[in-house]
Image 1: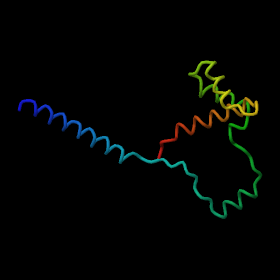
Image 2: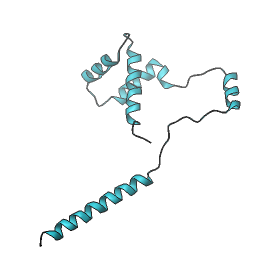
Image 3: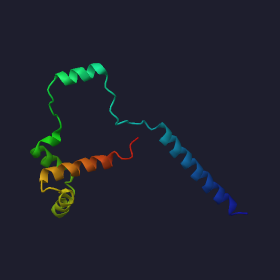
Image 4: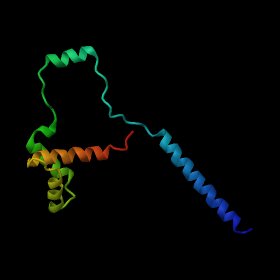
Length: 112
């Protein structure tokens, strides 16, 4: 009979921890990465202006700098192995861009 009280206390603590974790999950703000649908007027304005790319991954020097900063924790051998994995047509900058985009997808995979 003496061993029942510690088990009940442990059970109560576990239930309280689970309830607190569930409450935190329910109140967590959600971040939606889905683009908003465009209206017809915004489509007309976009078609009137020339397309200018503000994507930093279009510039090879910028791609190399971002790749070095994102994968700075890796050794040079691991970075070259990563590039070998993503290289399809021998373009190093395209492989760096694919690695960066894959890393970004991994970081936001479970955000909802």
